[in-house]
Length: 183
Image 1 (cartoon, rainbow, N blue to C red):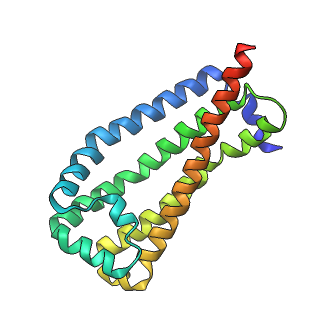
Image 2 (cartoon, rainbow, N blue to C red; image 1 turned 90 degrees about the vertical axis):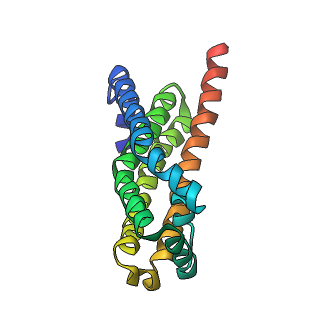
């Protein structure tokens, strides 16, 4: 099985370095780009990226765009472009953590863990499609009436579902690892 190679590659030290770099880059993107732009936009308009991702309908998008204005849309476009490296970082970070803890498990739980390591990567793929739909609406409002609000919201929902499944597995596997270690 292809995923079984993750039990040995990359080596533990390299995997830890990869996890740390992904986490540090994720935090840097949050602190330098997303936070300083997103938080004031939400504070002044009441709408941020989450409301945009989950607007679902043309009416929802039009309400958000009216609140944002041209300047707010430009800021949100920048944040959406920043989300592309951001999604790579969270996918590598969470997958790396899952792989790291999965290596300490055995049997079916380990096999499940190897599969769970893919959930953040799958989430990132859905995030890319979501971002494309968000950018289409931000750059050309005709996409608002072509299904982009529904597609963005649907793909955002699936993205978060895969992320939550992966994160929940990580914490369950971590507890199992700690119980095993205590024995």
